[in-house]
Length: 379
Image 1 (cartoon, rainbow, N blue to C red):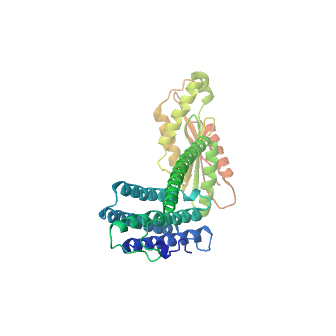
Image 2: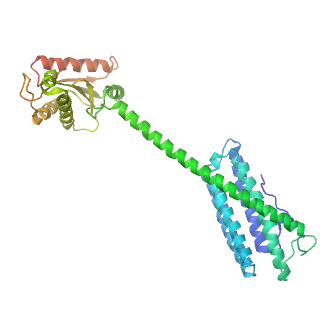
Image 3: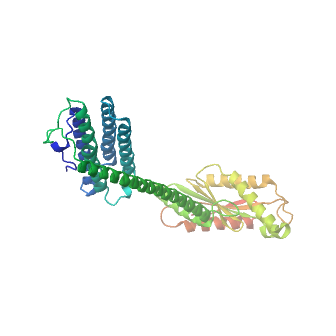
């Protein structure tokens, strides 16, 4: 697809400038073809990297052409104010095209908008700017070739043509400023939307953590425990590895609350949770509040021997904190009872069976005198 069709009417008579204009036309057409192919959803749309490559080529060459053209005009004595205005047009083009390119994803028809702007601007740049400047310089500097498509030779443009070009120039400036403001506003809006999206994602993550975290103990709650147990149960079934579960209950906790108050009871549970966490060595082991004064530890890839080692470490850690319990018939300090169960998942039972067996073992430990662990029998 040719976005811009070159004709002799676009010649300025300056060979180097005309050569560069033709190269700009070729790059615009190449970018336009790539954009349109992607915009129409063909079987093999262009990769983003390909589009970026074409745009970078166009931008780089436009900067090169503008610099050489400005130097050529300056060397031939173009009025300083005219030269500054011409440079400003070039700078506006680079800025505007770059902004439009960055925000093209928000455009309804980016291929039409970009290709249309590039073609219209280049036509205006050559017919309305370069040719008038070259014509003026040609009148003062003999030796500059007359363009082949001019017909009448080096005649000056009529007053009406100058007025029309001046009006088009002003219109371009107004539209350029408006489009730049819209593009920048759109880019700002996209940035704000991106910021809000990130904030929303962070807020959702925080809500998810809150939904899975026990507010008092700052460890996983029952909901998170259930999700993790299902996950580890499925993994154990796929790999054939053992899965251990340790259930922990604070001995005589109601009596502790009655003696030390509910705030004291909350502090006690936090201390116990910290002590239990200290008895866990692997990052894969998972501690949660099962309910009330009960805690649970999921032990992936852990057989009975390993689960018992964790139970012993938990008992020792709780005893070591020596938190006074003035109403316990078991000991002068806070103690816990621990139930241990392990399972090699053969698919015949679900994770509920593992929980039930660990819970039975916990009550066995209580029945045997508390401040100890018991191991579930069988599977």
